[in-house]
Length: 129
Ligand code: HEC
Image 1: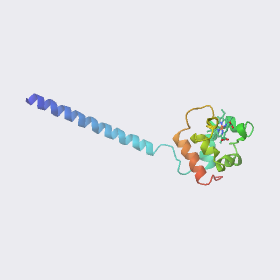
Image 2: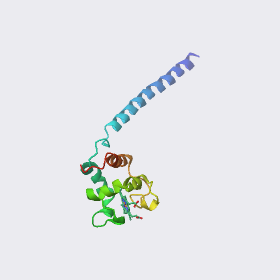
Image 3: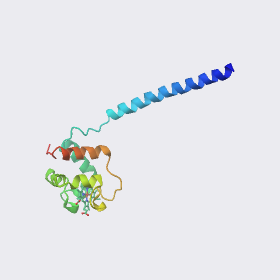
Image 4: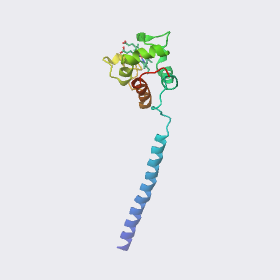
């Protein structure tokens, strides 16, 4: 009987120690999330939005390629689709036509962080900053 109790104590202790370990692990991940480089609060057109367009969009939307007459390598071009709502609709996949889900030919949306950066830039007045 004593052995069974002892075994029970060891098992319970085992779980406790393990859960402590995982608690700390969770804290670490939460901390890492907090300090991750996604800064969607302080958006600037030049520093936050342009790099996203440059890496994901401008092979089709530069001044020279301008597919769909959309130009995203200048502020003036980006401002047009920011103001008419097409920019957010296209990246959020809420466009009228799935042909206009951007980036085109990619089924998944751009990352949540990039979505937030672009949306915050638009909702804060799509400034040239
Ligand atoms: C592979 C080429 C390609 C890439 C990459 C691409 N687009 Fe497009 N985009 C197009 C084409 C083609 C159209 C015109 C589609 C049409 O009118 O049917 C278009 C249209 C658009 C429109 C207008 C949509 C509308 O409703 O009229 C917006 C806004 C847009 N793109 C934004 C973006 C953004 C933002 C990215 C990057 C996240 C991006 N695109 C990446 C090819 C691309």
